[in-house]
Each structure stands twice: as structure tokens, then as C-alpha cells.
Image (tube, rainbow, N blue to C red):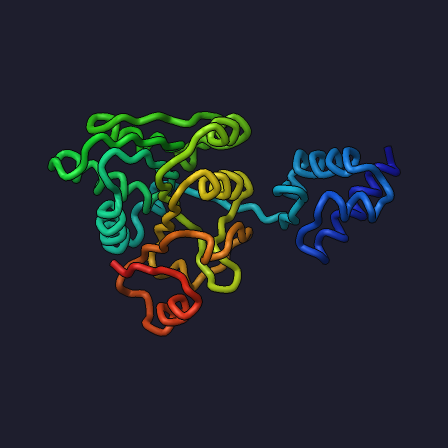
Amino acid sequence: MKKTEDRKDQLIEYLKQRGKLSVSEIAEFYGVSLPTARRMCAQLEKEQRAMRTHGGIRFVPDIKTTYAFETIDAEYNTEKEAIARSASALVKNKQTIFLESGTTVKHFAVALAERIRDGQLADISVFTNSLVNLDILESVCSVMVVGGYYRHERRDFCGFLCEKMLRTLRFNACFIGADAVNLNDGIMAMDAETVRLDELLIERSDQAFILAHSEKFRKHSLISYCAVQDVSTIITDSKLPDEILREYQAAGVKVICA
């Protein structure tokens, strides 16, 4: 048992230096089989010391954060409403879309519901992991909730069952929030559950739209899960500084400032 724990501690120290490792690198480092290396990755994730990725594992610092939907929902309302109106205009008739949880996406759900009520959109099918989005949209369109482990502080579902269902689905578009947006580090989130969900949504969608108010471009978060070039469009507000906008445009990233 002590040998196993020592090996895991050693792997974590190695992971801290490298940031991420593939299963084959772990197998070679320890001289073990690939199945054994995968079991090591699974055990570290179970202990919340690291996060599994496609074909490997990623280091997750031991940082505890709190999230309160009501508190965050009260911030940057003007900016979020502008982003929501701009993003909702991108939805087309007969599309199947996914709305992630989060306060900016909540405003998007409100704007989307208004377009449907006004007769501007028809035959929209919405999937979501958010009870907030369900409450806003269920009276105006078809809504399917993707369930799993319920996070009360976020009013959403996540985890294995949620991810398993998403792997069987395909969307015309997904609309995702972000904890931070950075040209070098990409789209970022604070917790591993959200990262796994968002990675999967981007993979399973024809188009991926990031909804993030301009202050998010000045921040960093814990886990970077995709490059800004990997999403279709980033939708932000008009307060984004021109120099930041030009940097993203020069990097080939489509940014809409609402």
C-alpha cells in the first residue's frame, strides 16, 4: 500500500512540473502496462488530485472556490443582456442547440424565449443541464434536461451520467459561459466538472459560441480546456478594449462586441 501511495505522490510531483501527461508517458516512466497507467489516472481523479483528459491526465491545483448563482447573476447585467441579444440572433429555425448553465447563458435563454414568443424563431429544440434555463424556456419550446449530479450552488447537473448522455448527441450549436478568456491560455473554467462538460459540448457541436463579458478577458482561471481558435465565435460586450479586440482578430479569432 505504501509503495502505491509513494508512486502516486511521485506521479503528482511529476505532473506538477509537466502540467499534463499521456497514458503512454506514465507507462514508460514507471515501466508499467497501459491498463495499469490508466488505472493510476482514474485513481488520482477519484481522489480529486488530477483530472483525466483524452488519452492522459492533467494537473489540478488544490484550490477551493465558492460559487453563488444569485450573487454572480446580479453582476454586469447590462453587459450580459447585450451579449444575450446578440447571441440569440445567431440561432436559426429548426436548430437543435445546447445551453450550458451560468448567469450570462441565463440571459441568453431569456432573449431566446423572447424571439420565440415574437414569432422570430420556430421549431427550436433546446438541451440544457440548467434548471434555470429549463424554467425560462419550457413554456415556449421543446426542452430536454441532461441530468446527473446536481450542483445546488450552480442550479445545474454535471458528472458521469451527464457526460455519457452528451456523447450520444449532436448539436447544431452550443452556447457556453466562461470563467476567463485569454489569448494565450484559451477558454478557462474553475472546476473539473465544468471543464469536462464544456470540452464535450465543443466536440459534439457544429458551432461553439462563448458568451463572456469583457472583464473576463482580464482574468485567469484554474483550468484551460481549449484554445480560443477552437470555438466558432466569442461574444462579448462593447467595453472590450480595442487593443484586445485587434489582438484576437490578428490571431484569427472571431469576436463579436455587442
